[in-house]
Length: 80
Image (cartoon, rainbow, N blue to C red):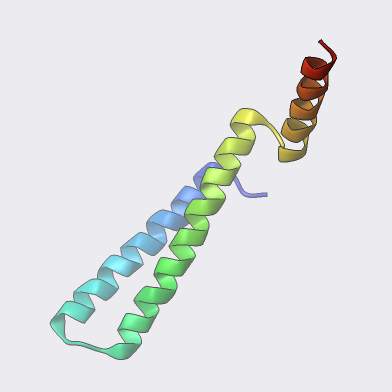
């Protein structure tokens, strides 16, 4: 599992790369550069999802434990 800082560093690196590609694309249109930008956008979306997921896991705990606690609380409410 990667750390938040590792994910953030990769986001920064890919964002800089995307900025350079946008500058190249603004000089002249190149479909290959446009495809690279789209691929980077998809990768950045995936990294941000991973970042949010890890941050939530660190803050609230593992998903299975959260669901287990919610079920216990639900049972206690029904029993009351």
